[in-house]
Each structure stands twice: as C-alpha cells, then as structure tokens.
Length: 258
Ligand code: CO8
Image 1 (cartoon, rainbow, N blue to C red):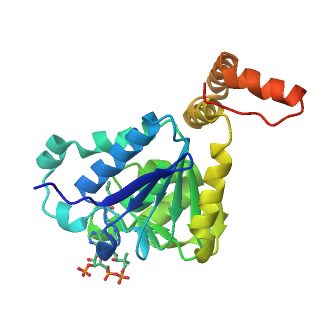
Image 2 (cartoon, rainbow, N blue to C red):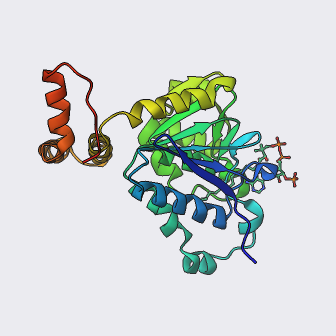
C-alpha cells in the first residue's frame, strides 16, 4: 500500500507550487513530509518549464513545527543514524527562487522552512517563533543560525530563549520578511511576485541568488570576486545577448533560460 502524501504539488505558468497538507495538526512536519517537500523542490529545480517555486500552508497555518509526537521518544543515537538533516540541507541547494507564503503559525521547523526560502510573503495573521525552548530542546534545522544572521545576535537570542511568538509586523520590522500583506491577499500577492520573477532571465536569477548567498558568509573581497565571475559567466548566455539586443532595439526581451 502506498504511503499517504502530506503535500500537494503542481505546476502552472512557470511556477511550481507546494502546499503543505496536514491541516489537522497545523501542518506539523513529520519526516515523510520533509522528504516529500525536498523531493518536490528538487523535481521543480530540474524542470526547465518551472522558473519559480512557491510554498504555502493549508488550513490555519503554514507549519507549526516538526511533528512533536514523532520525535518525542527519539534517542541521540537514533537521530544520528537517521541523519534526517542531510535531507533538509538539500533545501539550501535549490537554485531557483523559492517563495514562502506564510499565514498563521510558522513555528520551529515551520519557521526554519520559511527562513530557508528566498522570499517570505507574510499575512498579517502570521506568527513566527522558535518555541523549542519550551519543549526542552532548541532549533536543529538552521533556526539559530539563520535568525542570528537575519536579525543580529541580541534580538535573535531574545526570541530563541523566550520562545515567544513574533507578530508579522515585528518580523517585518526586523527585516525577516519580504512583504507583509492582508491575509485575504496573501496568495494573490505571493503569486503576483512569482509571476514577476518568472518573466526575468532564469540564469540571472540563479546567479544572483548564488552570489547573494555567498555574500552572507564570505568577506567583502572574496564575495566581490565571486560576483565578478558570475557577472562574466552571464555573458556566455543567450539571454544576455537577447536582453541587451532587445534594449537597443526598443522591444521587450524574450528570455529562454539559456
Ligand atoms: N507537532 C505535532 N502536532 C502538533 C504540532 C506539532 N508541532 N503543532 C500542533 N499540533 C497539533 C496539536 O496537537 C493539535 O492536535 P489535536 O487536535 O489532535 O489535539 C492540533 O495540531 C491543533 O493544535 P492546537 O489544538 O494546539 O491549536 P491551538 O490553536 O490551540 O495552538 C499552537 C496552536 C500554539 C501552534 C500549538 O499547537 C503549539 O504550541 N504547537 C507546537 C508548536 C511547537 O512547539 N513547535 C516546535 C516543534 S519542535 C521543532 O520544530 C524542532 C525543529 C527541528 C527541525 C525540524 C525539521 C523539520
């Protein structure tokens, strides 16, 4: 018998959609679900017809964290042997732009999933946080790292140590999200943004993402050398020729991702 699927995924107009689909438990991320999300991301990343990926929740949440029932009795040795984060790490290797459309709770692993995306569109009712401290643990899928890099040590420590939920307006204030939108417009606005990106030359988006990620960790000199190489590389693409010719000829460019 085939296992139940915990996500829906489909493609439309150059956008690959992933919908988290365990609404009864606020889309708590069990291991199979993480595996399905990562597989869908990888499939979309290799599909030439898809230019942008959009992840959303269902029911009243984006995702309220890892599935607590599933991990409650884990031992360190089981966790080491399971090596579940090897799968999780593949999210950072996705080359195409990934947008998270977040409504309701984005807690623990759910917040980590959103922070692993490139753009976060958040509804006004979105609530972000790392409540792991209240369970006697701490984030394990990049939460301490990504939050610290995004908002700085002092504020990250406060949110991580209190486990409190951050309102969407606060997340916006700290620069954690791309756009704060009314709840009823969340999907529409995230999709509008996805469509805008889908019209851009895919190789430029790919190398911009790659270069910005490099800039987060490397020193200025190293990051600028890296930027330069990627800038040169784009001159090998037919989209560079098309983009510049179209400008000169005063017509819209038709980018093909080559
Ligand atoms: N795991 C399992 N079940 C959950 C989870 C979860 N994380 N969150 C909610 N649920 C279930 C509830 O048990 C409940 O089930 P049932 O109806 O069978 O009782 C159902 O979802 C609805 O939840 P509530 O009735 O509690 O709804 P409320 O609106 O009262 O409260 C909250 C919503 C505040 C979100 C509350 O459900 C809550 O506190 N949930 C847990 C949040 C949390 O602690 N998250 C962190 C989990 S640990 C973690 O994420 C570690 C990450 C490590 C890496 C993971 C990579 C994937």
